[in-house]
Image (cartoon, rainbow, N blue to C red):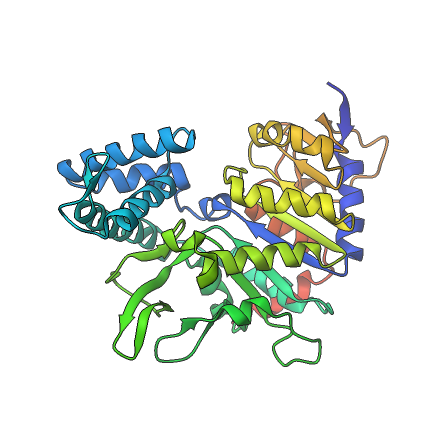
Amino acid sequence: MEKLNIIRTINNFRKILAFSSNIGFFFGAGTSCSFGLPNIVGLTNDVKNMLSFDEQQDFETAAKSAELLTGISPTTIEGILNYLRQIRSITGDRPDRTHEGISGKTAQQLDVKICTSIFEAIKTKEQTADISELRRFFSWLNTLNKSSTKEIYTANYDMLFERAMEANYIPYFDGFVGAHEPFFCAESVDSFVLPSDMTANWIRLWKIHGSLNWEERLSSDYPDKKIVRVGEISKPKNELMIYPSREKYELSRKQPYIAYFDRLKTYLLRGELLFLISGYSFGDQHINSTIFECLRQNARLYAVVFCYRDEDIQVLENYGKSHLNLCAYGPSKALVNGIIYEWKYDDTEDEAEKPELYWDSAESKCIIGDFKNMIKFIIENSGQKALIEEQFNGK
């Protein structure tokens, strides 16, 4: 395998980062893992262990059926929820109607129990997470004086991003409007604001897999169920609106998932954009198809993926051959111009500037795939570190 000098590669990336007029982000479960929260596989195991014996049997039945249906193994909590919600849609939650051995009522009860368990598993660890680095990241993002909107897309359910921004008094928007029970407004997600708009500099946070504080509710004032965002909650009353809800595929109703995916596609196709991806292992084909379709259509879109594991580099190999505007950095390997290289560190070819930000000399590996290290690298190279530390330490 050919070698690639990481010093030269990172120096080139620094220039791209410095001169990019439009920077967007996609964050997966790995970003939350760096703050002590479980990834999707760990969350699936945690949830299963929180169920009763009978519930675990139904959980296993749903998992096996979902695996046969999708061909994805192992099936995670998202696939199981999707399968249960399809059963609920078919049976109308009725106890006398079954599908593959699971009644509609059982599917409804297990759906609620899984959502409650997800909430408890994540919330407990979220409350003890140190979000100092996240606050620094948002301080940096808030200082950017760009003419384009600041957009973050995330597949995470937790509320670490919201906590960090609110701790820094940074305004953001997530598609929900109102005060009593903020409701999802698809029209607000569709629109791109003008630079003169008061909210133009607000950070846009699009949670494409839902959130711990979303619920689907019936209202006496409204004929259909509506999706609301609640504040701090101790326990969900209804099913959490987390991916992949059965409403995801009802295009006409424009529920959050479809609205966010439409926004993502439009955003990636709008023009010049540096799109930074961290903590995502490309296990969701719906997300993948959107990103790679846009990479094909928009030659001015450049995506950089920070991989925590070299296995993720291998996953991207076939994509890289047909998407030269995609590159990825892993611990010992990189994908650049459709070719996988092994890293080498050679400071005789290029001058190394603060290599400790991206290179572990003791283990001879790239460390920028860790979300916290990515944050440190970006801030250190922003020219705003002193200002950010002053703002952060003053709050």
